Length: 626
Ligand code: C2E
Ligand code: MG
Ligand code: MG
Image 1 (cartoon, rainbow, N blue to C red):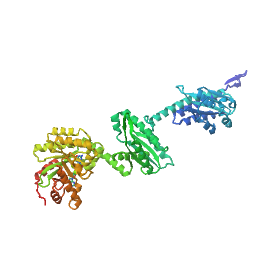
Image 2 (image 1 turned 60 degrees about the horizontal axis):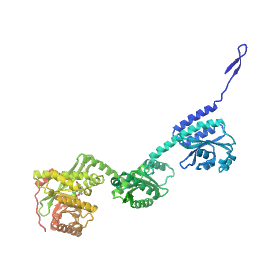
Image 3 (image 1 turned 135 degrees about the vertical axis):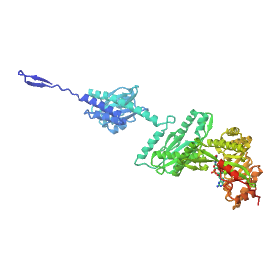
Image 4 (image 1 turned 90 degrees about the vertical axis):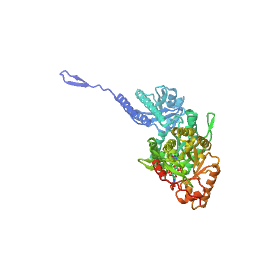
């Protein structure tokens, strides 16, 4: 402002100069607000719509639109204000090319395209009538070029009248282009990160993280229906990696992923939820989950090639049902996996529905397994010894070593429970080695102290017989403790023999060759027949204690026990009856000519010190067959 003075010095006029800063102010605020939008958590569409709306609302008679170009060179409208939807739908998924309207050509050539009169512009030939119908007469499209030079999109202004873009439009576009580039780059980076964190690179399937979010989304939907989760774990996949290497393992996983993806229904979803684990989301009734599982198991049992070798697979599937087995995604997932492990525990190659009872058992087992690990590490297991005596004379025959676990927090846990847990959790190896060593050391001590215990029997789990080094280990312990091999007896159950016939026989034979005794425990509870007994390298057979119940009353039990004794003896084996509790049972067994008896009638299993006391007070009582 400048005052103009009259001659007397009074102000006569004021000269005011005004500059229109609307444009600059607008561009500055656009820039500032758009940057804020980009750095916020708004979606690409929200940011792009925002830019378009700001430009359109600035009083210019334009309709902006922002398109991206996807991998298959198609346009996709990601931002607009009042551009009619019917037109957007028409432009969307147009393949870019030399004659597909201003935007398509700009994206195709990477150059700015002006169409001052659509009515006569050849580039608009195919789209002209739609444009005219929607009141569009001119357009100006500018490519959005990312840093690497790639055309990632187009920024287009549509006009309602025939014309060239004015300078103000050009300013608005050049300011916006810069913002669009930023927004797109940021969006692509975000997408890439999301893809990396939500998709498995090996199979291209969504991963566990994605699964969790997807389940949450599904469960938030007001119209959620019932659905089921199938958790699929490949059985023994570790062996493939061990034998053929991880590269072959990876190839197989991606092959299996493709097979599974092709096999499931179009509405089903498959996710790689772990290394050798997949999860399928499916809907429908429970019966559908069963038939889907059957189909998948059949599919996987087809031979597959690993290099030159053909391998077959099996899988275990666990199923959880929404909403019966849980309301939250995480719970359903956990339950499906629990059921899958249950299926594995049943030998694999099958499927299993989740039930709350099963879950409780699983938790119990986990707690028990952890406590057991601790007990083994702190040497808290103990051996007790149960006397075995000659049936007729009552003289000492030997003792059976039995493990005991008295946990400081969980209390006394029976071996029937913890041995099963140890077998499932791989701790049985440690228990077996420990008990073998402890029993042999004890025997060495008894020998040294002149205590009359002719033999000690140690129970071994079937799993030990899979270890080829078992005979070697036993030989080592014998040497270490210096006890004669004949004073050691190894008990195995008859199921061990059947499970792994050849390998077990080999290991048992090797033990026999060392001079160690082999005893078939719990005879009569499994499936082996009497005739099988002949082929086994055992020199002792123990009649299971369940036979003692009916011994006095049931004829059939009596005839079975008699047969076992006869056949066992005819094969040169010593026959031991377990669980003998009364005098009557002893008399019957003596009448049958059974060799050895073990049971509460003589003594419960005893700690070593108590055994010595018991032995000191024990007078063998001879009885004759009646
Ligand atoms: P088992 O080898 O058949 O052992 C005999 C079981 O019968 C023992 O139970 C013993 O306490 C019980 N028993 C002995 N006499 C009588 C009787 O007169 N009446 C009754 N009702 N029971 C009697 P325990 O000690 O509970 O062991 C159960 C099973 O746990 C054993 O059966 C054996 O299979 C397994 N086990 C125990 N210790 C070990 C171990 O160190 N390693 C392995 N692998 N298994 C073990
Ligand atoms: Mg036993
Ligand atoms: Mg037994």
